[in-house]
Image (cartoon, rainbow, N blue to C red):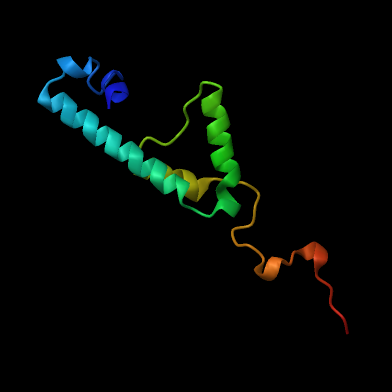
Length: 102
């Protein structure tokens, strides 16, 4: 909450100096970010592992591209193109290891 309080456009002040309205706004912002990250952490690890790895690596290099709202998280997951099929092959079979005998 203290980090969010110092962001421009949220409260832009220290936690102790904030008004009740500023604290409420910061709390609402932190809830929205928490929901976005929670939503991002739950989808299929098979399909979205690369996205989560990319976001973590970008953050490590100083670029915070994590979604800031639930709406942004939904948009990111719906539109992310990883090159991985939407559905896993059943039974672990892929095109490479399936043979048909006549």
